[in-house]
Every structure is written in C-alpha cells, then in structure tokens.
Image (cartoon, rainbow, N blue to C red; front, side, top):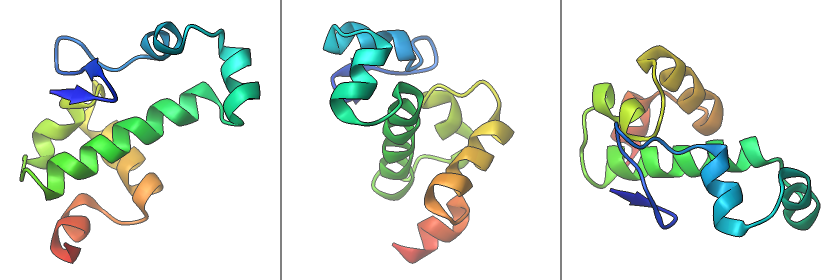
Length: 95
C-alpha cells in the first residue's frame, strides 16, 4: 500500500521522520514553509488514507488503524472521529 509516495503497512508505519526525509527539510522549516505542524500533516495523511481504505476498498475498521500506522485500534478510532467528526461506521454509511 502507498500513501503520498510512502510504502505504508503493518511493518512500515508512516512516521514523521519519513516525511522530513521526503521533503528534505527540518521540522521547523516544514512548519514555516507549509504553515502546518509536521504532526498535523502526518495525521491528515493517515486519516485521508484511512477514509480511502474504508470507503473505496471496504477494508475492515479493525485492520485500517494498523495499516495507517496506529498501534492501538482504540487510539485510531478516536483520531478518526476527531478528524472526520463521525465514526467509521457512520462514514461508511454516508458514502
């Protein structure tokens, strides 16, 4: 699986260091250049990928968290709801 040109999966989760390496800028420079904190950018990438996996590919929610780099399913479910404003089940029904 790929997200923003990064190979992502259970053995290779998306991490901030990968983003810094990709853009070849220090965290502070990324923040100044793009007006976004690196962690916020990372979470946004993870959640967009999670929505894609959920809606377009029908991946079970129990698997998505691990695929986008979360160690805990519950941490992922909370982050997903904060990002999208709805639970994964509600998001799937809306599409």
